[in-house]
Image (cartoon, rainbow, N blue to C red):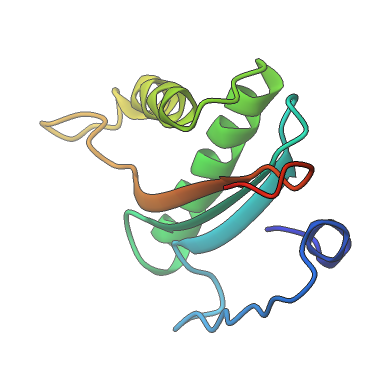
Length: 117
């Protein structure tokens, strides 16, 4: 999840409404600073509910972090890398389809220095 400190540092006015149905959930929000100094914010709904959804959220967050750590800054490239990494992680999940889980998500980047998004 995005930390309050990170959100406070990058957003002047904001609110977070996060009310999962269960204690854990497939929904998450995540944020980071990219290597080009833009602020990236993701809101997502991972496949599954409860514990299975939470496991998918953890996997999706790890894949997003990996994409950003590799230096990707283009939104489509971050999502493409995320999709490939998640597919690789879950392709041997025991289902007939293998690796069809993932997330519905939005990703927006803010260029705060130039006041663009």
